[in-house]
Length: 463
Image 1 (cartoon, helix red, strand yellow):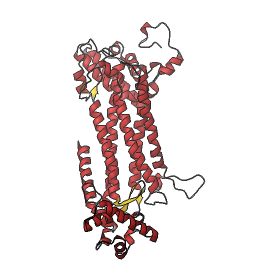
Image 2 (cartoon, one colour):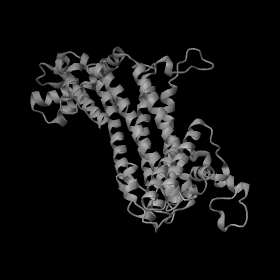
Image 3 (spheres, helix red, strand yellow):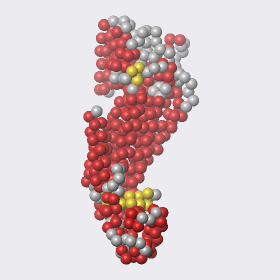
Image 4 (tube, helix red, strand yellow):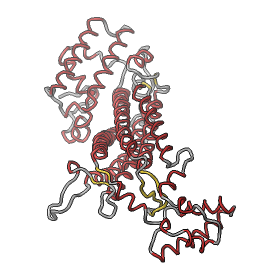
């Protein structure tokens, strides 16, 4: 079959070239955006006199018909058409005749693919953001129930200070807030219309790019034609944003794996989101968080792949950029299902406050409170109080008890200082609620953070 671009060629393309060159196998995902962009392009051509009313109506009716065929699975995608853009144009010409040949006036596949792909990226940027908000709501729902559930806060994966479980859920939530904001920034930065710049230098037809930008929901047309057809920053932004999202998801998944182990037993994952062993009948494996943890490597790879494609390309358009789509499609589909299943895993897990409290009584979590108490009570420099507290911790270790279980007399003997009231200071709940600065783990501060985030989510869901 003759190529739409084959006028200057005297020989048919080899079948091997057709297979190697074609992107129709994956870029057919862009069909809705291609048809939507073509409709607006046709409207613009009508407005500047390239199309007459009859031709315009035929093109619109033809595009609607082709869209219906694709939606129903009745459209034949042929490898000889190379890509979704040529497939739709060829089908349109077959369907309506000469009018179909006029549709490509004033545009190139270079700006056409930049439009379709950018619309896909911006559309899925919004979809991912909506799913992030849903996940944040699920986290805050749990956080509200556990603002007084004491657990060990950790640094270096060692017991550090007592916190509440709700506070930990809020920490996860704040990660996702940044992911949402990062995606929002990328959306605004890339919400510009590529269509109408032609192959790389503009068009001679008086193309009305402002009209097309407004009709397609873009903020404005892109500024420079050469940059427009050759850049893929919008795709890289999305891949980077998804990579950051998965870095956070992976860290959360790691904690879910740890917490669901017998060594921690802070949570039990729902049977609906766990798997078993083919040989060990007692096993209940946290496969979902393990897979979520692994997916980060996959999306990081997609980011690095496109960075590697783009790094050495001269301006303007190069065929290399055909390699921009599959990684983005893969990262997007991975993000969508991962956000859904993480939300379900979190919403259905069983939480064991008694085990969290038991673990909080190991590791001398209130040692810092003792040092702070000595500073306040005896006006000591903190470093001196820190040294005294370290000796008291060592004594508790030798005795085989937690620092909170020592008697006042024992602490007094070791410190040789005024320590009346120290037992209350060493209480886990007192310690947690003493962290009352803005952003701290005190129950009322955790509630405050939950309230701020809920209002933020409501604002962005309604906005």
